[in-house]
Image (cartoon, rainbow, N blue to C red; front, side, top):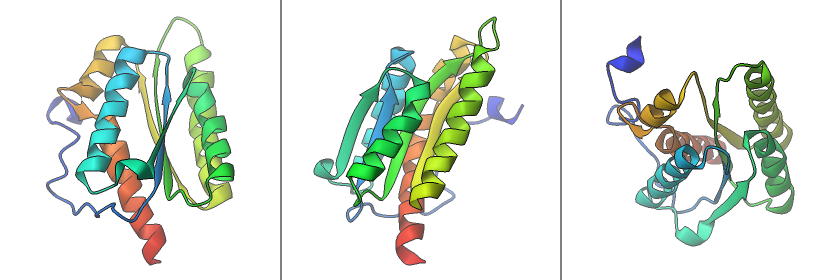
Length: 163
């Protein structure tokens, strides 16, 4: 598997836009807080590192990954000046099909909210087989999906501003 070979959060091969003129929201699930807290810190620090003023970042906690879609919808309705919403969560495979339903609903919901509002709504949700895989992708050996989600938000905000 390719992810075993590298840190996925290496952006040395690409240009990351300056975010000083953009406004973002970060919605983070409280379920699996150890993981989602690390994702959130990665996203927040990455936005700040790339010039986004702290006052241009709205942070909103929600109970779980399923609620990310509704929160993104509410934020985009109430804050028309947002350039992107970053959705962060973690769903770990269990013994039931609950995992499949949640992951599918969240992925489709996030996509649909973005299309509805013509804004970037970023899928920063880990969907892993076990806790270790989540740790590896939330600041561990495979980088931090929160960092990746923030870079994606910056790139999509820039795209929306320039087309």
